[in-house]
Length: 159
Image 1: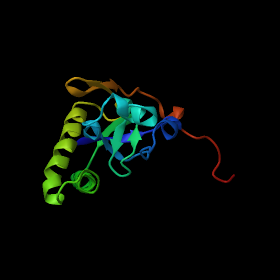
Image 2: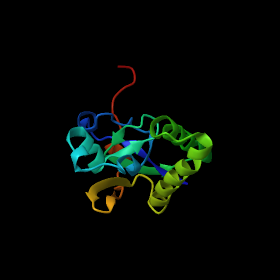
Image 3: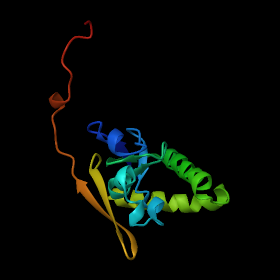
C-alpha cells in the first residue's frame, strides 16, 4: 500500500501556512475542510492553505509537497484513527464509530491516488472555488535518478 508523506525543500511552508505540517507525517488532500468556504474566506494564510495545502494527519497542519511512499497496514489503521478523532474533535462527528468509515474513505482516496506512482514521486494539489464547490487538481513530479554521491556527506566522524 502507498500513501504520501509531507516533504519540505525549504522553510517556506512555515511562513505561508498558519499551521505547517511536520516533515514526514502522513498526508491526505483534506479538501473537506473547505467545503463550506466562500470567496470571503480566501484571504492570507487561509487562502494559501486552500489553494495548495495537503493536510497532515498528525499536526493537521498544511504542506505544499508530499512524496509517495509505502505505508504498513498498522500505520494505515493509526492514521485512520487519528483522522476519525479529528472529525469528532473538530467537525462534530458524534463518535469514533461514526467517524471512522468517513476517515477510512478519505485515506482510501489518497491511497488510490498514490497507488500507481513510484516511490518518491512528488504530488501537489491546486484548488479553486466554483459554483459547484471546491475543485481539486493534482500534479505529479516523478523522482529523478540520482547517484548516492549527490547526497553523501564527506568528512571524518572524528572531527
